[in-house]
Image (tube, rainbow over all chains, first blue to last red; front, side, top):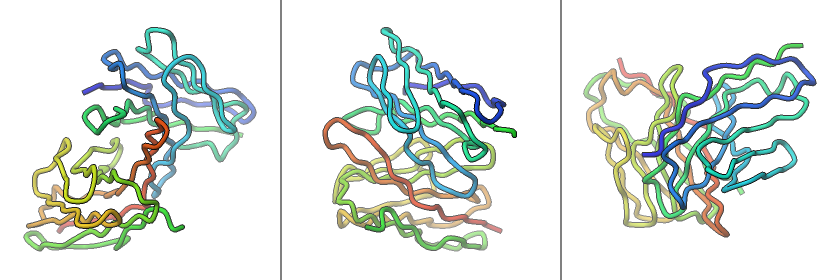
Length: 111
Length: 114
């Protein structure tokens, strides 16, 4: 199984850019990297997914270096509502064999 | 389009009782899965299904059974509840079109076993 390692917690202030890095040393060739966001008492919600280089959508950017052994989720100008747990997940395209959630990163955004 | 729905939202059981957690999705996704989340922990995969009639075990399958008779439904059965099964249970379905692997999660079922 492709295990992931993330910081347990991060603190930020409103308006700042937040970068959360995840390491996944055993990522397989066909695996994608996906980030989810979870608020208390809710199920995780998809944020962004990538395979290599850089992916950007309306809420975040995902940076993946050439060796793909790590990835960085970038949240621009965070707000209080971005306070949540963020999970990095390595997902196999063809099945669940590499599907592993770590403990996630608790991001606390303060005024 | 309701997405992924789960019932009940809350449940209290006594040790040894059995029950079924219901999960349904209306997105015609082939892949569905069940996770449990314990306090301060990430999600752990219990069972998953890659299509009707096909199921497989995840990381923590003991004490749970699943079946997949239709694309829409994926119930999780607790055969004889134990306090160690006190947890929040999430069902998810997975989109795999065009290379995407996006999972959609339900709102969860909070289970307490006394």
